Amino acid sequence: MGAVISFEDVFELPMSLQCLEEFRHWTYSDGFPDQARIDYVHGRIEVDMSSEDLFTHGTPKTEIARVLSNRVKAERYGHLLVDRTRISSVPADLSAEPDIVFISRQSLAAGEVRLVPKASAAPDRYVEIEGGPDLVVEIVSDNSETKDTQRLPKVYFAARVKEFWLVDVRGAAVNFQIHHRGPSGFQAVKPAEDEFQHSRVLQCHFRFERSRDQDGYWDYDLLLQGA
Image (tube, rainbow, N blue to C red; front, side):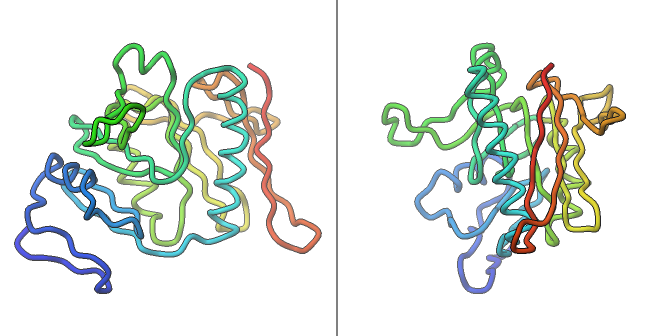
């Protein structure tokens, strides 16, 4: 990049960021900012400093993470991580922080993903997941619509992500879609008559609903049916 780019005088992008390797090295450093989501998507650095919308991003993410975490823990599938979990893929030219990430014990054992240790090499301290996670969830916000719906699905597919969930609750209806890998890209799962969608990764079916709570705010429920 030819010049330092500043964002609201909060932090500056180093001039040396010419490739994924240099970007990843920056994310490991003490100088990497923690007040924004900063992704490297196929040669493009994307910075989102917007505040999280409480009831179209925060609460749906919390509900999805709650249900998935319970499922993963009960079945001892692996590890579910929420927010500031960085995944990187050299083949996809990607380093990003999805809303929710799941990696299975099987994928770790097979070397499909690996945990990148902190520079200190202290035991049990990791800063990044390298490879293709089993599941990635993105919740669309006003500033991320094009990125979440167009750019990220392509690079997640190239990164060998096994399953991709896209959630958009900003409109009049809930848009909840599970995507499986197809021959050349992610393909949306066709909902059953009861609107449940199958997750191959978690081996069950899900439906996402919302209603108004007693105070008039949106309340979300991720419903689960057995395999």
